[in-house]
Image 1 (tube, rainbow, N blue to C red):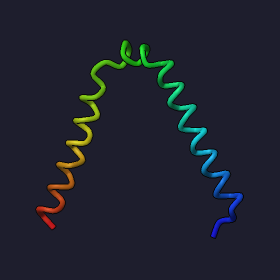
Image 2 (cartoon, helix red, strand yellow):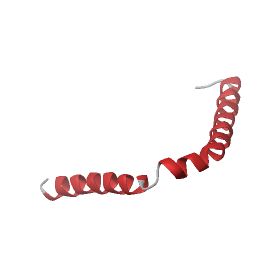
Image 3 (cartoon, helix red, strand yellow):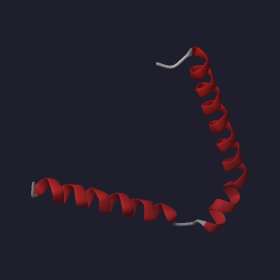
Image 4 (cartoon, rainbow, N blue to C red):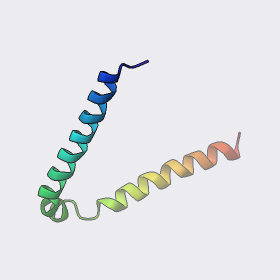
Length: 61
């Protein structure tokens, strides 16, 4: 389906992308801690809401 060159390029691109993202996150970690405190609760509420919708859907299906 893919040539060997395409697979090598995809693997190298993915690894480079992950390394760059990790480096940038480490660089900005202190800013994120200062300005985005409490955002984990927003994520938990969002996931809980989606779970509630899925539960209601399967109960009335």
